[in-house]
Length: 490
Figure 1 (cartoon, rainbow, N blue to C red):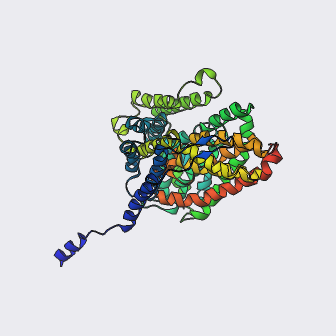
Figure 2: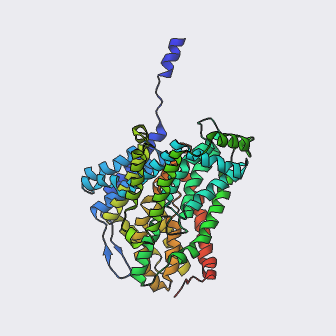
Figure 3: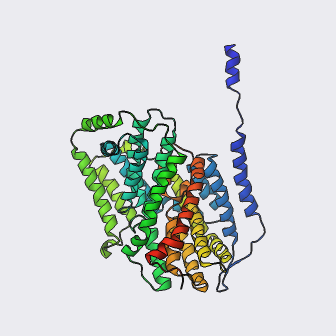
């Protein structure tokens, strides 16, 4: 009998679901790649935007990649490697260009952010912060959700949401370890980490410091319309919708990822005991805080001090990384703990994003989409642009989504009597909240590292959250922003 059982365990089960999605991705690529030539996109001035061979292949590659990323038929980092491989084999872009994107400064920024998180974790700062916060918010899991979300959103007011996610992530891991000692995913874990990624995006739209997309969008606005939007004017209009989204997301996660337990009995007492055991703050912790806050201050001052404006944000963060090793806060073992699956994921996202952009596929999509709304009501036109940016920001860098859509939208807007200000703020709102794909923003990828959810679960959670975002945005475009003085028509 034992021999028979041994033989039975060796029977391999075919994973038909996995095979289906592998071939679905390949089929989508082949259908687009081998399809006949597609018609040109034509903008309102009559200019033609042809979809080249490379652009059509880029669209096919994107469909293949998105399918494999969402359904995780292979590790998402390996799918990202495929992005570069297919570009090189099918001559979509030169191999050197396609693979160089994996070492884009934005990818280095992710590495620097993760190393900061590791430094916080190793020195014990994350535990110290987590225990203090738990002592403040109490034992109710709904308040723990709220405390974590408000802290995440609050930090994005003064630093990039990527850096915030990297700093908050180990803190959430420490909090979750008090909720469950089991490594098995829970609803609370899914809500905690997906929620962190979502509110990091919602908070990042409020000031120019939350992400680079705001500065890029204001640059387009100034160059095309000749008008300026100040730092404080942006915050005046974006703060209400950002705050509303953070609070609504809290309610959203309380419904869709309602924690298994309403309270964690004894949590306050445990958190206090653990906090007391940590003792006084150590010299290593102080050095870590000084390095990190110095980097944050320099990053923040780039928007106000012209002399610092030329400093690359990735270089600033990597300087902090080097200091951790120079001061022996981190060692070689810590360097080898970097989650390369996440780094490759983001490298692949950069590569497919640049591929869509540089082959002209993204511009072709933008013109085709916005042309649909050229005769629409101003309200529909604004929401149409916002929806396009929302879709694109899930697929490519949000800066790139802004760069390909806003110039075209600013050209079309005067024909329909739409004020450019409402177009700008609506697009910036959706650009900051890519809730569907892990590659949409770095906080999404960092949250995935928790292993509390799959990319498919993230996508499913993002559908109602994205619908909620569009409803809230429609309310602001139609009622709140005009009430605050924002022009909607000209």
